[in-house]
Length: 294
Image (cartoon, rainbow, N blue to C red; front, side, top):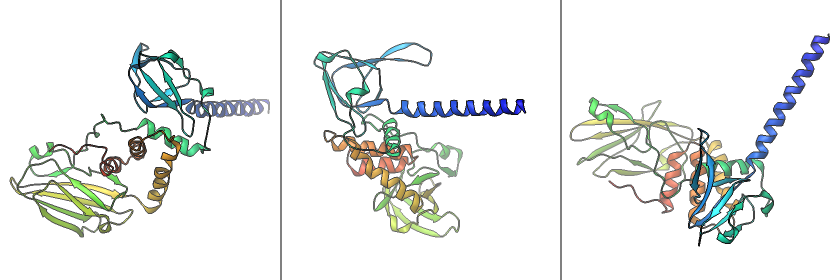
């Protein structure tokens, strides 16, 4: 009996320790602010994986941990905030400035769930200098050389959240004519087909059904080669959940945030949900992303 009692007490101890660590981890995740704007040279020290301390330049919409010391250069300025918080404006006169959470007050109530989504969006924030992630190669029918073809959008196994009236199909190939075919993945029924000289086709969302899987084929005229990739539309429940957070996130930004920040934050959230196609389509629709060069 004594042994069982000791084991029971040990389980209680480690369970309490685990919960304590989880709580500390959740609390630590809230101990961050981010840069709303930065002009000029603002730096901070960070430690690399190898334990080496290096100095980094602060970027717009970058998360900064509480306790971080910021060096604000001459004529430089920045503004810091956190989700639903007031804005702190700093200049070289405040240098060095150590981030303290006590400087920031919640000016609007937020739930822990939306706060977590906000920080995931920040982590995946798509800045102007960010390039699209390398697209996954499509499945290929044809010679070995054609297997090196990249640049298909939507890429293979892409999850699509319809955020516009059309789904854009793009490819990086040169040819006089292309034949685009879209089929139901399971029944192989033809959903859409078109012959074009372009390298982009807008297919209305009404051709597709939520939760269904499809496959699109591209047949190049000369030399004759065929490419294909599968994609799936999110279910109605998934779309509703994601779109609610997508629409709520900008409300956590202060009034000083411009529309570009809001759009890029939303795109970052979509990317954090594994919806890269929707993220980049959103930025294109809002005109904050240059069109890809052909």
